Image (cartoon, rainbow, N blue to C red; front, top):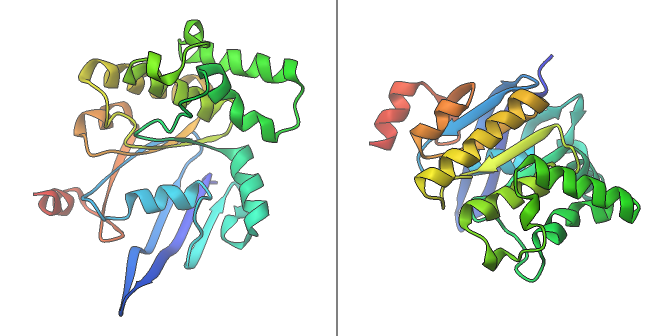
Length: 232
């Protein structure tokens, strides 16, 4: 059974006189332990799909079932609790709190879980060690390189031990060397910890680290040839 099942998934909103559908009856299954790269032109629905899977947004119609739970039926409070337990989000621009250290940024998600200070410390240091940046735990974002900041952001995403990681252009703001290191890290999380990863990217080179690549255009999955024409 697939971990994520999207059936005729649609997200629509009104803009003036028009109805905009970033996703339009999309059907997709993501097996447990997959590393899926999503490509497509701007406005194709990639980030909208990530936000739905992450529980940040809710579908207009269709169903989104993750590990047996139809998350489109959850109330806002239950959805927030579900997201906190099951999904880690990695952003292109890191989204670190500038006045907090690396340690404090990674600790933030744990403050909602009722853990003791000792338990939080153990989890934070485990996550920082996993991404290879424990020696920077007392550094602020302004004292780190972009690659180091993204590693902190990944540590924050995995500190609650979620089964799913969603990553929106995780290398988009990085140089070639840092991008390679971050992609190797994501690949190791998939292979060694069996994290299911869904990644949005515009860079074909990053798809080499994924297990498979799908293309979206106008809110629907398209064949690779059609996707390349849309990007041209």
